[in-house]
Amino acid sequence: MNKKELECDLLSLLPPWYREILDYQQICATEQSQMEVLAQEIAAVADNFFFQTMDAKAVAQWEQIFGIAADSSQTLTFRRDRLLNRVSTRPPYTMGFLARRLDQLIGPGAWRAAVDYPNHTLYIESSAEDQSYATEVTVTVNQMKPAHIVFINTPLVHTDIALSETVGLTHLTYNYRLGSWGLGLLPLASEESQGVIKTATTPSIQPRLLSDTADFLSGDVASARVNGELVISELSKNVEDCVLTITYPVTPEQAAEINRLELLDEEGNVLTASSVYVPITGATTLKHTILVKEGATANA
Image (cartoon, rainbow, N blue to C red; front, side, top):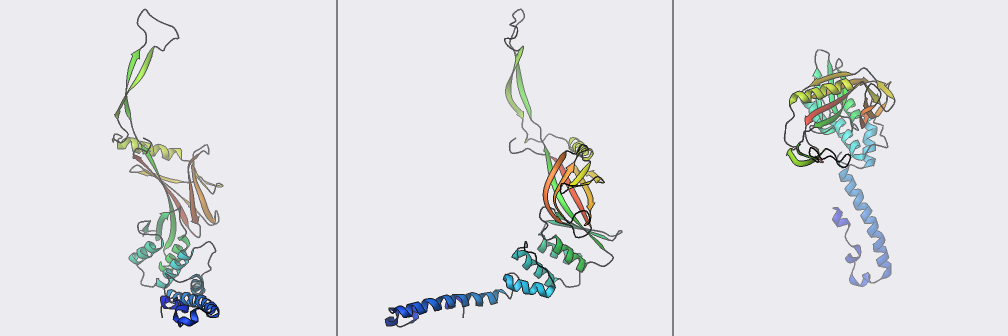
């Protein structure tokens, strides 16, 4: 019996002479609401056979089986995804298998994994703005990786700096002639714009200027500040292909959770500020990338 059959009009099933009696109308109305509840319960039983559609009660039962302590801030969608990930994580484990797991948890193209074989280290890099799945990624990787491999989570903060050039033509008009001079009445000469002869959208900036700008930014960044309090001065900086990369480690002892990251100059002025979400559950390396490129803004 499907849901539509349970939600039929019960009064219409009675003989016509009963439908006009108030008592039968009330009885059918009461039974109708009970049948609707029954239909919902039957549909829920079918939905609870699948992790993608199960309700909160069924999710809680499966979390007890896996020993998962759910947080009130976690969404039902995340809890379903976490259970599906746990139940489907089975050996043999390969990089391809890990890639499929990361696609499901983080999203295709939203992460990057690299293995430093000489140092037995696995790095997984993803956006620092939304790391709600970071803890589940850590659990999954620790379940899959060999014991001698160290996993380091690398949250990424990416910033672009766009440079553009505009060339305009100006006509200079002199307001006085030799022998005729009104002191203070008018300026010696007036400038009159003749328009733009090279727009910002036309490429003109050479790679050397972009690279020099990235080098300047590298020298301007002196420290990083975490959560507005923890200042880290030991930064690793590298400029390659007009991209400035800044990395530094953060331990659980320094911060249990990161919600704001800032880059500072030598005088403590804020150069960049980002609102992020990064739970620190183990070895974590923060990574900032600043790309210097040619481009015009919408206002330009």
